[in-house]
Length: 124
Image (cartoon, rainbow, N blue to C red; front, top):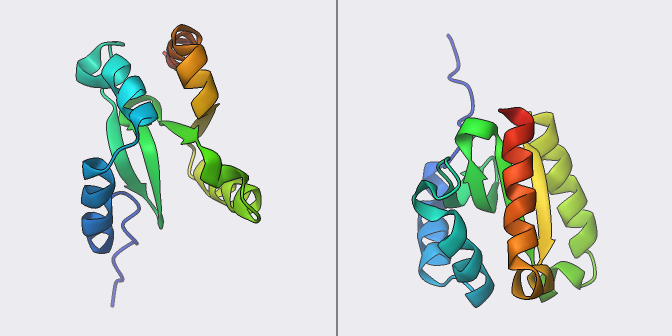
């Protein structure tokens, strides 16, 4: 009997969590989303996208690019180890990860957008 491969993207059991996250986005996520949504950078981004057991802030399927915004929770005990394990999973799946702090988005939004553009162009 053939077993169906595990679904990696947007697993059904995460749907409610993904919807909840989309409905309660942080101000920082709103700021970055306003710059990358509607193909403003020439590519489609999805927000609160499921990849395996994880949900990423933003994902560009055409360029296998994950964007994560690191707020205060990423500096609590154990969080950096969790992020490392999560990033390794993503890299093993062939994805690239860009991480920005909330402070970077607030203080240097143009540079953050330029870094995202550079990552897209590097794979174009």
